[in-house]
Image 1 (cartoon, rainbow, N blue to C red):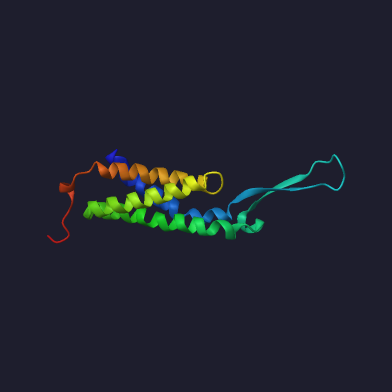
Image 2: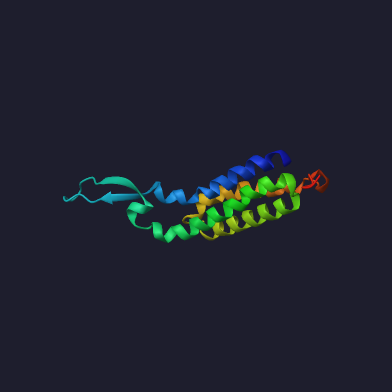
Length: 138
């Protein structure tokens, strides 16, 4: 589990940082009703920006991106300051998990993998010992 902590933490942090990109992905299905009854309509995929709903989701996605940054920072700090790195990764993972579960039926589903990866990293860092820390001043 300790070996997976670093790659999972980096992947979860990057996934969180890229959360606002979701508004640019084509995820909405828009149908055009044909003018004659019984005809087959055309459907197209549009992004949240094109559909006009990006303003509603952007604050939540920005918060997820804001929580991805401490996840990445925790992976950097875990080599020098293990205790501080643990705190950062747990705060990042739990905040992202809370937002993901609160919005699980809408936009939260996109950030759930990042929260899961950061939780794996947090559990992996928990197993490391304090004596492996490298002192800042030698």
